[in-house]
Image (cartoon, helix red, strand yellow):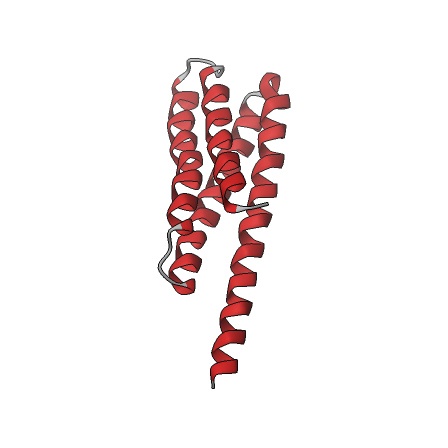
Length: 125
């Protein structure tokens, strides 16, 4: 998967979260969770785009760590919504699956970049 595919995938993830939030009950708790999960899920895509424009491997890793944290935060709120809104469980479960897949991709990218960075720095020595 190239970076443009992942940029599109993270954007779609945020859009799917927004669609889910628009279907939630109009109660205070759901409103608060919806605001937070929309913020964190859209941050995944925005910060991934920033990572793609990183100036160095260290900058890329730092930006991707933010993406990792925002993805994990989004998963937390999805898990809360699943507990609080069982009738909406099917789309929530699907979004949790997507969040886990994205998280695995980001973690793997961080590990690969770290490994490649240390390989290149060792080979220059």
